[in-house]
Length: 165
Image (cartoon, rainbow, N blue to C red; front, side, top):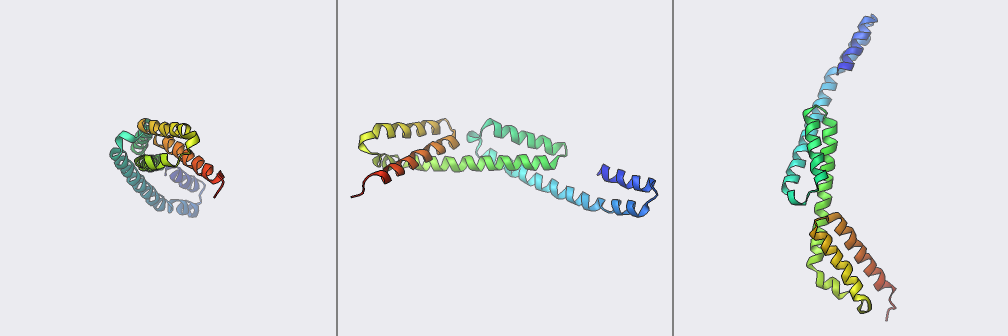
């Protein structure tokens, strides 16, 4: 905003009052724009704080650090950065939550998954499923979901490669 005022002042110094008026008349729109950005950032930050609080134990430290950076950016008046960081936190929390739900749902159906393992290599497949379980217990949900996806994809590919009766 100061840059806009300085531009208007330069136009007045150059004895161009029409240009100065044109530049200065853009200030209300700029202020309104800043207000809507502040409002959007405040809303995103509030929502991010809410979802982080709701999922406290499952949130990585880096995500909490980004939330704190968003708070500091908002306090310093950098609403665009605050909104970007808060939106990033929201995406991470949602992705973690979705991965957690996917893995937990699959682990509740562990017996059905194990029943699909081929007898010849059942131990190898069981070890992979146990690895998914271990990753899930460490609350690395995204990694657990990737391992689970790999396991189920490989299992499907194996079943499709078998001769059909």
